[in-house]
Image (tube, rainbow, N blue to C red; front, side, top):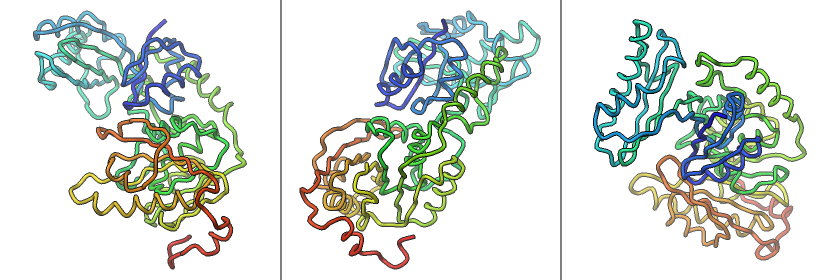
Length: 398
């Protein structure tokens, strides 16, 4: 049985493993950056189409030590790369090295490329060209302490690229990380979700797709395995048919997204429409300081800005103070999850978290914190009265 590796953002390996097991795969090794699993190639297609949390599905090919150029070249030549693509197709080599004698990533990539194309030249008299942007075959190489792992990328573009997001706001969260946050929260797929900083709508769109059981890769135009010589169209058709049969078209609850930027809300609406979930999400132009729960019972999941430039932190303190006040005084009886890469700003909320996860948003280590707003502990005014008296600046609500 072939072995595959589902890579993912750091902090999400546990839910990736659970997801793979729910798909029926046997998992057998988990690292901070992904999970190994066993499957035939049809299962590889299935994982690419259905994984909400993984970044890529890789097929491990080689694992060897190398200290010198010739060792690296000769080890690569041991594997037959000509069985994957034709010599008229293209390839790309992605390399990451750390603590290796062969420390120049560009040189390592060139040496591996030479070893692969020399195979084609020896066998066919011609060799594939290199295309770093849109190759037919992408090879991933990771070298750590002189130990090199070589894998075939079956995904092509990273799996976070679902296909529905035509535009984004500032500092958008990747789709698979957004889905991962929802998974980590333990959301039951029955409770209304609220995002108080919805931006381009990614969190809510991912949640709606989960609730409707829409496969996250359904709108992608291509996967890396489409280019392989032994691609099985009949198996792919079966995977698609199975995914479509599991979709549902109705929900008895809604999703709610707030933001203060009208332009980014327009983007969110377009993205939701592209994803086929627009009818289930209500977007409103509302500042966090005046936000109200749309229903008595709901869950809040949000990713407020946390700044990356000098001076951002001071400007954002009021945002976090408003978020803390709103959750404490208006969202009683609700559960809230907040993602932030700035621990100092989180302190401005003046709330105590009851659970926490550490995840990486790109190269930023973030805290994903749970806050439980106990019903009746703070709010004295009934929710309907709050809605009647809430301050609504002219032109802000839509």
